[in-house]
Image (cartoon, rainbow, N blue to C red; front, top):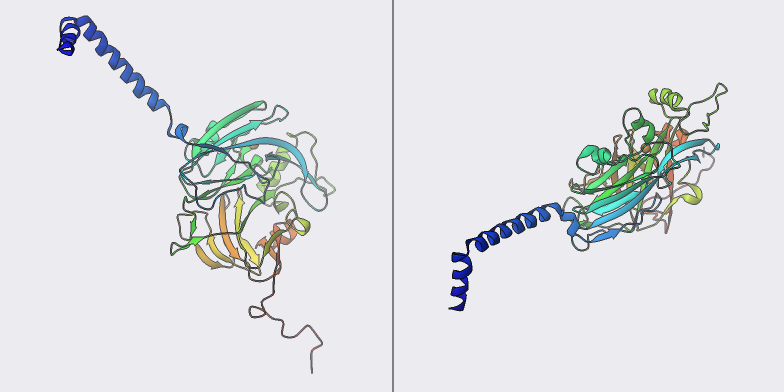
Length: 376
Ligand SMILES: [Cu+2]
């Protein structure tokens, strides 16, 4: 009775009250719908920070995703600096993501978001940005990540394609290849949420992973045939472009320099260990090969949605792509992991060593007779 009286009094007799209330409810509804549309799906997800590490190592990661999708925050600072790129002490000014050529690898799972803070310190001279081949839209994010010296930008993108991919700087025009061959490139691995699988759908686990970034450099020479060192970062642009136009690199290296991954810095493994090798090349075709081993499972173009190919001797990586290969070591010793254009490997620098410890298996290989004088 009391409720009915109230209803009659306010909603039937007092039209002003009723109309005001209806308008208020409509306004509240519009505000609610609008604010919901403004908050993105990713804003509701847990946020984690990934500590990027220098190649050939990968950041800590799970093979199989734990929990639902996340926003993975990473930070990269651009450095324009001189480094030594060969055994002769040749100095070359690189443009580096996080102080490293190649740039660090980012590892996420399908459905995660990468949120990159890209910092171009005031001490730099050039505009930079980043094109992630793993991302979708705006030139791979390149259109939304231009930073002048003294600026930073934050770019978020959703990893919807599982696989290994390159990223690189792409500021526009001739600056694109120039920055890429100055070392501004790296890789992203987007793992399937339930991990890697063979063609029967069985899980593939790895004990360790290495990321090999292959880099072609094009250094001009002076009239005496010595490599030129340019004092200022912008100097040498046109001369370098002339060498680049020959399409003949002066150096092809892994991890930024000739022999960066040999001797004391060789990759390591034990007999019985399964190793994932990720190979990225942002500019030029290459053909990784493990001397003394194979690619047990290989994703030559890097897509984890495709079943891996098996037991390959050499696999092809087109310029502007990354590939993944998995091998279980069965013998100890020194293996060479190289670009099997052997001129590029042994003369220009594109090789690494893998030092493997463990017990030799005579069944797989045995020297029946040591080298000795030919018997009559
Ligand atoms: Cu750049």
